Picture 1 (cartoon, rainbow, N blue to C red):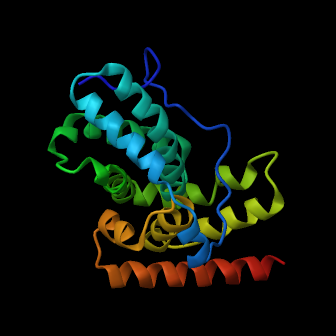
Picture 2 (cartoon, rainbow, N blue to C red):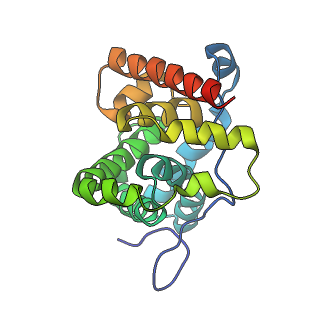
Length: 211
């Protein structure tokens, strides 16, 4: 199936110029930040794309590929791996979006597919990744023109275990709800809540240690 992304020989993603700086949000801040309008727009785009509207599919890709890539970068900590994971995830999304009965669940559904693709790559390349981690710096740690606070937060996230990093990225960075984080990562809500709690505590400890 054709992928809704720009490019010729190798499909190219609609990349954002920089990674979003992740902040340690409180539940009150999270509650005050709603994306209802954007989610409704995504639902309409998905419905139109499934009806054969190519332009709607391209707009959906333009809105979602950067978000998926941002998360893949955090989970895989390798640019090429992240791009490949997102390309594979988006291809799967395009193939399977007719199976999504409730368009309102598209965000969690899309991130679930991405999470599985990233987990497959981590399992398949675990040995090589451990060896290369000692030889090459993390892309986020050498990003230029990034505020020091944002860099410290990204480094703190990178220091988390995979499970805690996934929970933190989805909850703090992508503003997924607790229930959505649990659904995406395939764990009970209580487990997702615990991972977010411990991730936040470890991040705070890392930031305080850098101060």
